[in-house]
Length: 178
Image 1 (cartoon, helix red, strand yellow):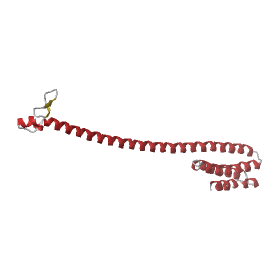
Image 2 (tube, rainbow, N blue to C red):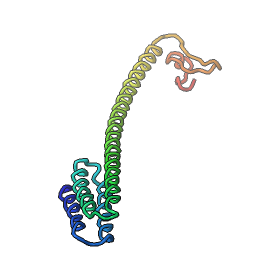
Image 3 (cartoon, rainbow, N blue to C red):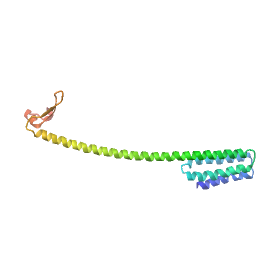
């Protein structure tokens, strides 16, 4: 459809060759060049559609302007050719920016997926290590409580951190109370 629209707008320039004044010529130049600018904005993300519109639109306009063969036509044709070149450059730049943006989004999504996977792996390992530590604490407490002598652990300030069941029983207290 881009090519059809480009050809239609390009053909719209042909009446310039059959008369009309400079006002009509400039009007058509600005209308068609304006449409080419819009195409640079909207179609440049699909280069094949952009080129299919731009060149069939602008080449007949440049030819029609040259065919007028008046004082202004040569300069106007050069300006339109340069304008087409500028649109081509900006079309490519817009396409590259669009492509780079899509690639960056894909990379960001992949990084987010990998980050979520890494977080899930870390969470799983934390749960496994926590369970291992709890098993180890229970085993240590069972050994600690099974010894028939007083066992205790104090901090550097002399406070009891842990006592075994045998000591607590002899003192008539719960281990938490000591």
